[in-house]
Length: 102
Image (spheres, rainbow, N blue to C red):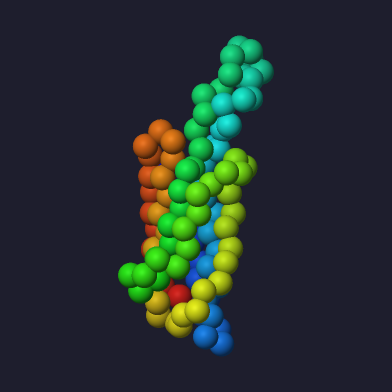
C-alpha cells in the first residue's frame, strides 16, 4: 500500500502535536460479505511507530480495528524536527510518511 498516510506536525511552546490519518480497511475477520455471506478476511494494522529526530516518540500495538484510523498525540520537541510514522499490518504490508514539524 502506498500513499496511505496523511501526516501533520505542529510545534508550539516546547511541544509538537502530531496528527495522522491512515487509510486502511482494518477488517477484523468477523464481518460477513453481504453478497457472498463469507467472512471477509482479517486485514488490520498491528503496529504504528513514530520517530522524531531519529528517536522513537510513540509506539502503538493496535487492538482497536476502525477503518481509516486517526491518531493524534504530543511529544516534547521543536519546530524542524523530522517526524516519521510507519505502520505494519497482519498481511506483511507496510507504509511510512515523513514531515517536518512546522
